[in-house]
Length: 506
Image (cartoon, rainbow, N blue to C red; front, side, top):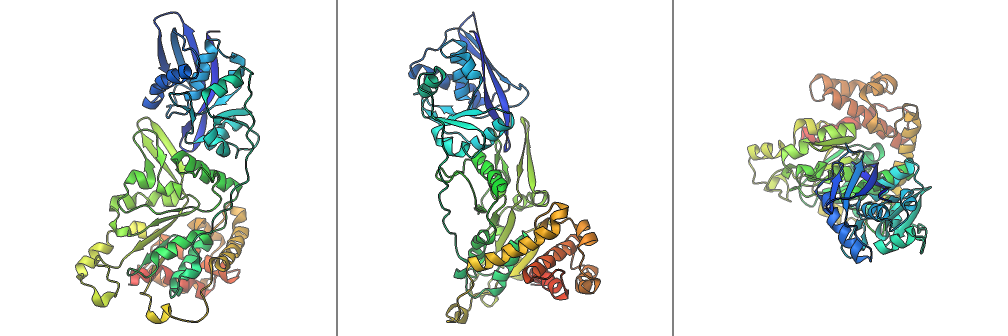
């Protein structure tokens, strides 16, 4: 047999695409020709595969080897093709039956000693194999739990190339991997730790109930970071579809914990203010990888010290926040990642960031305006809730009254509010108030005209844009859902307007 084929999977964003790996042996000067738009990592795999085959006890054929990766028009990236290349070369040389190789999907990177190493993106790769009708995949042992998340696919885990060769020859079949029970999710920070910030606690609850973006401003120690870190705990757990979607992103990014193969809780991403545009949104010179915004999909992206981020980096968030996805284009191709995350910005009121407040501030009015202007108007216009947090007073800190409500109590109210919104929006295919398009909101779910007088007056005098008007209505619906009302009233609209214009008024 001088021609053999098997299957592997390439990645395009968080989606897998089947790759047909063909190997042909012919007479001529010994060498390897690799075709099919391989990147540098795939081209270097020839040397890794050759050393792995020899060190695993096999024989590398001294013939002209032509390796084709189809479809030829799709760029091939990463080291996950190593195992498929090795198996196809051995099958073409007659060392293993070609029929057994042709039925499998093979994923994994080979070490020079023949060991099989874990790779990124196994979950979307196995999902692609399942959609294509391939019943069996072979993966590294380190990726077995992740691969077993896909129902209806037989997962065979191996630690070395020699084990795969023995399986293909029928001498020692690889056992089918059985998925272990998921470990319990450790509890996150509790909202009961936050004292003396009733307006901040209210804003976080409203943000969680409606999926709204949030901007927290206040002096150091006011509790901005504490509130942001507790927001994911108020969000409902991810359902099965959402969990697989988020897990696939983290698998491609290489941030999936080995002891937790499935992400079941909303994630929390907090990049440093020195993060680049590629780190925040996604990119890379080779394989396009998701950034912090994409890794926060279905969760929270927290940007502490937001004015310290480069303005151009922050402004790249504007379009993805509206669309819920980001497309990153390179000369070699493009990748699209979902990024429907809740954005939380935190900022000090001025550069000196005095904990004592305005009385001890040493900044001039011009310095304060320049500092606050680092956040562009179009970006802030997309933030539904803007809250100024005062410094926590000694009386509030030492108060011996009832303890603040814990996360579990607030999360129950959030779940009820989200359930009411989902029931109302089900006919439109929406789930939370922040997703309702402005036109649909005004046509189908507009509050009574008498309740809109205050927000209409703000629109007339230029305090609100049309986008801001729609966002106030969305927040008003969230407030009504939290209160158990079927329609927002004038008080709900007034509170929603106050939560949006509080920062502007300050």
